[in-house]
Structure formats: structure tokens, C-alpha cells
Image (tube, rainbow, N blue to C red; front, top):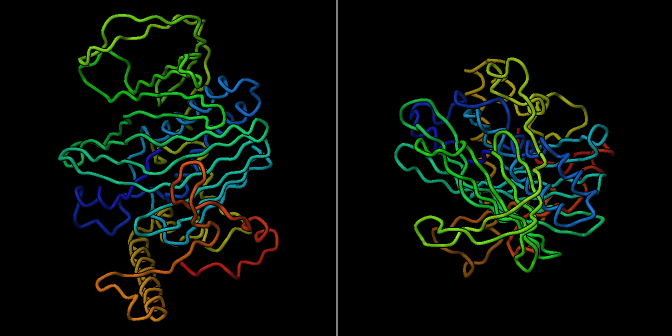
Amino acid sequence: MLVLDYRTLCDYKSFSLIYRVNFNEPISMLQRLSEDLEYHELLDKAAKCHSSLEQMCYVAAFSVSSYSTTVHRTGKPFNPLLGETFELDRRRESGYRSLCEQVSHHPPAAAHHVISERGWTLRQEITVASKFRGKYLSIMPLGTIHAIFEKSNNHYTWKKVTTTVHNIIVGKLWIDQSGEIDVVNHTTGDRCHLKFAPYSYFSRDVARKVTGVVMDKDGKAHYVLSGTWDEKMEFSRVMQSSRGGENGTEGKQKTVYQTLKAREVWRRNPLPEGAESMYYFTTLALTLNEPEEGVAPTDSRLRPDQRLMEAGRWDEANAEKQRLEEKQRSARREREREAASQRTSSQTEEGVSHDNYQARWFEHCEDRVSGEQVHIYKGGYWETKDRGNWEGCPDIF
């Protein structure tokens, strides 16, 4: 999915609209991150697999499926305010509960935790780096995605590929995904290497092509995956492999796989009728902003500038957006003053701002699998919701 700080994009599209909502779509980036769950049933099926290698095929397909929502989505989501949250409770329909929280403002970072009654947990913390390259903008998501299966205790990780927004200066914006993903099963050593081919006008290959190979810990290939990130993926069991001719300019030998008949593992859901007039939202995306009782006061559904923009009240939305951002800056200055007052003069670093902000629902710690410093869900959100007592939540709106 597309995850970036769109102020960079606005800088190049229109200097006069940097602080305006006119390039937005009426959802928060936390809601966009929740759209990774559009094809949660792939993880449901993976949880039922007896073979870890077949399970890898479903996890790999899930890692690809999240990009299918981006193909027409050139509108930018609202940048979340620090402390903003978004819950997605789909236990009754789909068996899972999802919580996102904006845990850092500099750099912008969102933490996400999903627990499913169907035997899996998904968690991630995403921030981004971006580079403007003349006619296009490259966005490199940073952070690791984890999928853990309860029955087998298989623990998978992977990272996102690069998103490229083309025609930044002139022309119609369009989006491509390119790069490579290594999905790793840290329990068994199995691995799937996926390649997202960048779009080329001169290529004879199908556009948005994705290919992959599932290998065991010894490097033996067991499945081949193929398809596109915007339409479908298939997988085939490998019966035999052999070395073919040279592949590309590096002189490497290409491996040729003999496989059984391909099976479809994932296909994109059709967009709802009239999607072109509704920001090309999927059926799931259309439900994300529906008001729900009992959510935290920091929930994206309650964000006033986003609500005004959804109602078409553009001038009010722009004014409200500026008010919220100034309120956020004021709160940060207050935290910096408090942090400074608690330090001795020997601890003070000239020219360095200190912010003692701590996330409400996620704890900053070292991830035991990746070794990264990340925010991991510490619990308490859903219990607080059941009690209906949100006294500990910050006032961000």
C-alpha cells in the first residue's frame, strides 16, 4: 500500500497548497495502513496449512495483495496527528481486531497490531524515506512486517517495496511498485524471494508483474509464484529444476523450473460501482470512516478536518487542519520544556530538542526477531474500550 508523507508531493505539485486538504482523500494514513487487511482471508487460509512451505505461498500472496489498493489511489491520506489512533473491530464478520497508533512525529511512524481468532497475529511499524528524482517521487517504506501463526508457531517477516509516483510536475499521476521482498520464516528457515518488475514501456512482459520462488532452508525450490500486484497471484509446485542459458547482463545462469498446473491463490476484489467518483475506494475502504460508538477519542473517525473535507466543506477543513497542526506543535513545545526542566545543565545538549513523548498503546523496545527498535502493542486498548473509560487518552482534536 502507499505509505508516505505527502507534503513532499504537495511541494512539487503546488506550493500554495502545502497546508491544504485539496490533494487529500478523506481518510487518515492509519486507515490506509489498515487496508493491508483487505485480503485477511489469505492469512486465515495460511493458518490452516499443515505444510510450512505451502503456508509460505499464502503469506507471500498476502504481502503482494496489499499493493492492489494503490493502483488508482493518487489522492493523499491525511498525515496522522501524534497520538492519533484507528481501530478496526471485525471480530464478528472476519474474526480479527486491528489497532493503529501514530507513535512518532519526527520521523513520522505508525504502529499496527492485529490479532485474529483464526490463529494469526500481524504487527508492523512503518515510517518512510522519500527522494524526488525530477519527474517522479520514490517512497521507500522502512520497517518490518511480522506474521505469527499460533498453531505452528511459524514467524514470518518481510519489508515493503519502493512505491514510485510518476508525473509529479506535469501530467496525470500514476503509481508503480518495484523492488524485491524476502519473506522469511524464522522458525523453519524457509524463504520466498519476490521480485516486483518496474513498469517499462518497451517491455514485452505483462505490466506490474510479480514473480517468486519458495525455498526451504537448504535452498531447494518447492513452489513458484507468478502474477501481478494489481490483479492476481498463482502458485505452482516445483517437480524439477535445471540450469538454463545465461540470464541478463551479469552472465548468471537462469534456473528453469518444471511445475505442476498453477493454482490461483489470490485475486483482487472488483471495485464498487462508481468507484471513480469515490476516490477509487475499495469496499473495505468505504467502511473505514463510518461513525462507530465507543471508539477512543483519538480515533481517525473523529478527526474534524477530515470530516469537514468528506462533507465537501473545503475552506473549513483547511482552517481546521491548520488549527490541529498548531495544537500539535504547541503540545510538542510544552513537552520539550518539561523535558528540559527535568535535565541538569550537564545533560543539556545545545541546539538539540528533546521530547519525552510516549505512545499510549504501544511500547518502544527492541524486537527480538529483527533486532530493530520498534513499538510493540502492550495491551489494554480493547479492555479500556469495554470499560468505556478513556481518561488516559491525550486531547489531540
